[in-house]
Image (cartoon, rainbow, N blue to C red; front, side):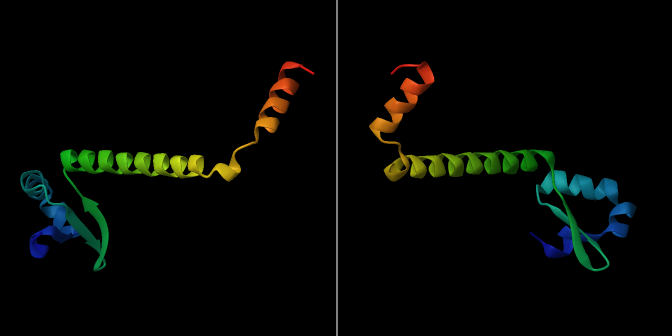
Length: 95
């Protein structure tokens, strides 16, 4: 990332929006816009954004699966056979 090309003020963006959008689309590099000298937003091409969003969703799914597997492997949280059958009998009206 060429820091001098990829950081612009909002005012500069307003003046050169079309050119800067083309730059983002061609280079696939995000553009950081500043307000009062501080980074405010990041502009990114749609294809790269979609790839990052899909990767984030995948990572969240993998993390959730890993958490579920860890919880499943922790057998101390499992009900005993007696508890399972007692609950089934109660649920189905069996004595």
